[in-house]
Picture 1: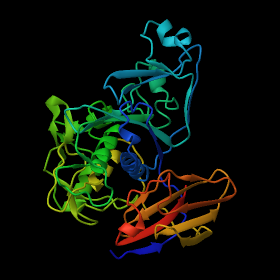
Picture 2: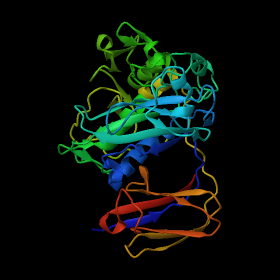
Picture 3: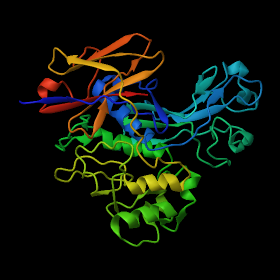
Picture 4: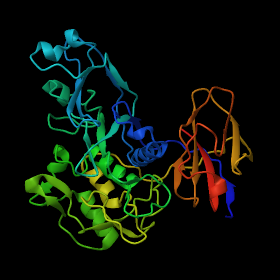
Length: 405
């Protein structure tokens, strides 16, 4: 097979939030598979490049009064799981006030500014996956209403409002998944990246029954957010007075299946391989059913899905980040026939090698490299590094670039 390795080294600033994928509750070891890990990281990074929201830092501590709690659906068990910033049961303010003990005592919990956490794992399920936002777990009303609290982080306020600490996703342990970030085959397997995008969307409040911001824009059986209506009309020319949802009475707030279409959101580097392609109409990401049709084996985030984020209060990127000067990289040949990269690093800087099959759809090699002020290097096929597209010697062509985060 002929192949061509082209190199494009570039330095892009991060434009969006940072989604930290946390595997601590992956009790079944689902994400020990490097292909699964690369796919969930790619889906999380895609949303992180779309949402451009200022989130205050989190610094929860063990306090005599009001140490914070938050609750997740444990990704490995499906049970409600309460985490406390207290160090132990004896110092847990909420237990002293009559609430049940937490399931885990953290002795403090922190997130950097603009960072958002995603807990992931797998378990037997009736559906492909389940995802939703982290909840506040019966904190005092003053914690919910404080816009600077660890729950609201400057995003919103109000007892019933969306918490923006993070989300939780569980994947079906027994599903026939396709983790290939290239062209998913559609041979009876299900594209993991598409499902991960959908579930992370729920974590941000999209089409989510527990989120007051979304429910508050539903009249009858239609979501009437102005941004959603405008996006649908712009993409399709279709005049609507709101988008139908599946079943309000059953609290199923997905977009009505097979009813609407929209174009793929072009900013934030979509993964176009296997999709309808840029500029073409796709069924909405947040519909309840994902069907494979011919060569279309993947769904991406659409303009309508992104518009719904705006309607519930999120800030969204309005363009791709500008190019900045090239990184000082030396290029050579690897033993596997691909590229070998060396560059003088900056202390604390994070460098991510990305590869592509078409020069448009980029995926990240994992893990990233952290600078120490010395020379750092990476080679195609390097042991201990996972490239979702595989070595250049097995491909028709391959493109490379490096992003400094």
